[in-house]
Length: 272
Image (tube, rainbow, N blue to C red; front, side, top):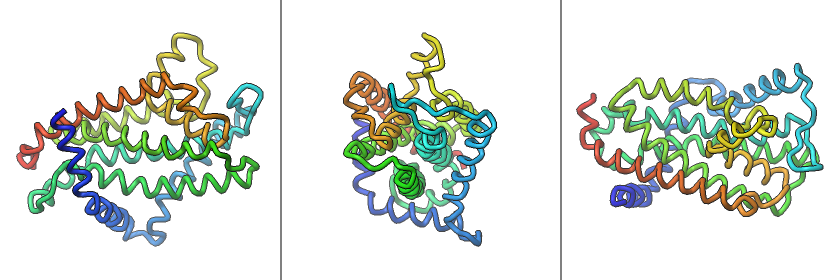
């Protein structure tokens, strides 16, 4: 608990630094490209179109029933979940290698190492907000107009941010000690895409497989995003037991990640 309080305190005390360096991170990453930061949006858009073409057009997927009696085209259903997946995947992958790729810089600077994963997460968060804005406009033109239920998107954004930070604290620490962890995480997340309700509905599965896969906290977030975008209800209230489970997982991961990070960070420079 003490480690978790330390990490949280460091995030608040260095919030301005996190925001400033996250913007610099984005600019420096794309400074050699003619289209610059536009590629951060172009890449996920291309991926969405590819998955829609493969899973929607070629297989001629029927409309997806988001709630009983209410079906939507596959492309809108896919878009509602994929924008969250892109943020989670990119932030987690970049966060896992955020410390060991900056060890030389960290050895010359004086600020808490716990803010490094958050800098990377924030840089991806800005892209996520742009993608969310584009998705919002597409939904409006598609006839899925904004409703009061859209407000809950703020809650699910916060939930996603907390989950990614908790996971990144763990993976960035382990990746610094054992570099293979980053490669293993990359392979695992690619597999997780097909075990999450991003490309297909879990209602097609029999029990207990469906229930087991719902233990994945991403399911909660993705379904919450879709509920907010399509305006079909207050997901976090209607599924309050699932909400409690999700936050229990996040808290456990954060406590473990904080403990791991604080315990080993004084030795990170030794891994240069």
